Length: 173
Image: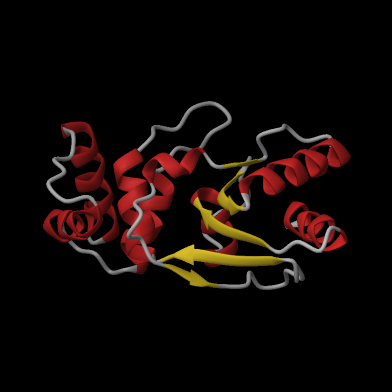
């Protein structure tokens, strides 16, 4: 949260309000307390040029990677997705208008990505398992209906279906 706080301070010093839509691991951490940490913040920021410039300054000040705040997630975001205004608990960032997607949309995004864990990256399985349990999703057809709301006519790869079946069986024995 220190990065977002500092980003707000820098924006405020320039009399700018940044619109920040949070996704991914940072959202799982801040909104759901579903993980201990995240290596980056997946977010879409407007205006993007000011957001990138100020994020680069935060990275330099903290000695962080330049991509600590990145918009790589935009390839998975659909234009009709609804984001809701939200303030992470304990964050004092008056120059940031933060929003987040619904848990359903986040689940759909996580399932669509369904990245495997790699050294230094936890993958998506832990987040998917958390969201399935939180939303009380009990079977694969429910997951498919949720995905169809946002990504119609998507056929999940066999590997993703296998992961989902395993996670669903573990969450509802």
